[in-house]
Image 1: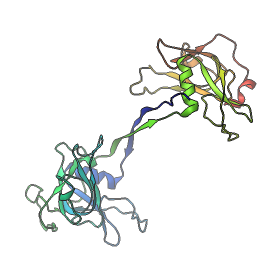
Image 2 (image 1 turned 135 degrees about the vertical axis):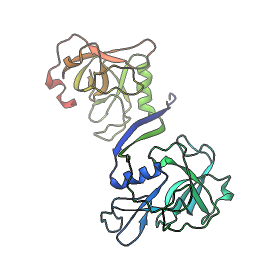
Image 3 (image 1 turned 90 degrees about the horizontal axis):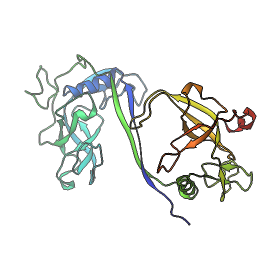
Image 4 (image 1 turned 120 degrees about the vertical axis):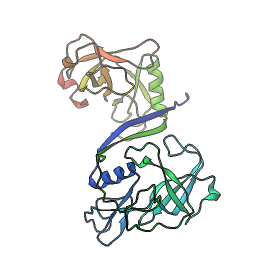
Length: 327
């Protein structure tokens, strides 16, 4: 049996979201070194704040400032920080109930080792030097040997009263109204026996599928089992190389790290002899002339392990009846 392939893959995209009044105030407060919670109808203070009471589902908007000091309620040691985590050296993940809050906030604690961390220890916020209105404006927590902060009855800035709330109203100039969060998934993909054979065949400029022993359909790319009958497939069948465009879309947004000018066409292509359409880019024709039924063939670049794109063969368009079951 040939060696089964595997490769590291990354799925990454920016996630853009708008903020409601509560989250806007919370993140804007972090930018200005103010920690805000929200008070429920029965007097609980929730940090981080939410827009609806998790117990009663009542909408809540009563913002209240809490202290940047608090108590660790539980923790776990992180021996090997990963990319994008708050610290690049070993640290503790902690749940911290800030003074004045009734719930705990999850963040990192900078400590020399797990022996220096314990439930009940006092900690304080270490603010990031550059703050933009994000949870990362709290760089981390750090150990603190002071007592719980008490609400102040007079005005005072954080410079004068470093760990005392000042009764902030939750109103800010230039509030943060939206955030962009990068979503990323790193994983190792193994295509399995059937798709490994398919990929190896592509390196020889061939397309190979597998036939179901029950319904006799040929699947490309092969799955190792028939999705209709649920039985294993093993009989290899070479298909194509030409095929028919069944459906397509016009891409107008340029993808990061993809050197293709927009607009371009991405299509489902039913290779001759296959009973499942695969997808590929269409080139060699203006994007607005691509159509269902267009006959295409693969174009390989020198040394390429898979087709770079598909181009028209010059044949007459396929009759709809020949590919309608593959839409």
